[in-house]
Image 1 (cartoon, one colour):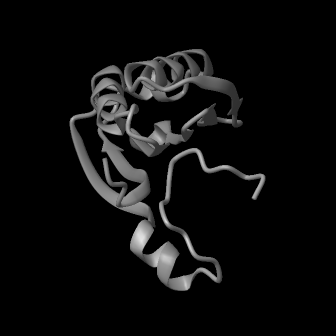
Image 2 (image 1 turned 180 degrees about the vertical axis):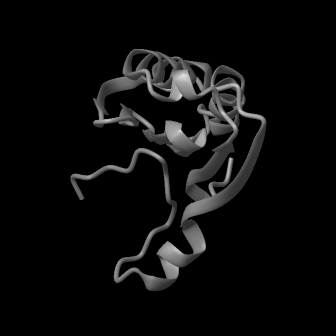
Length: 139
């Protein structure tokens, strides 16, 4: 299968979410880790922080990249980034799961292709016969 991009990055705006969920470090961390699993990702680590007086920010580092969230419970709003690499992970599965769990009434999404292979070849000082998801770094 020919690779055209190294990663997919979905930027998500969730509106009118459940404010209590958005202010719960425990639930946000649980849902973000479960979203990574739903996307078929391999979790490496996660870290979450609760702000005073409210709000949670966190990151789930996955073998295939990362999922991050920043919440503003006072506005019922969450900003989420779902960045995945490889063809075994589907960031849209994570999106669907979070949409449901955060009880978002509205959302806006933008998908960005990351690491476009044609641009890597064009701007690189090296010649690549083939670009793979797991290149041999010993060359």
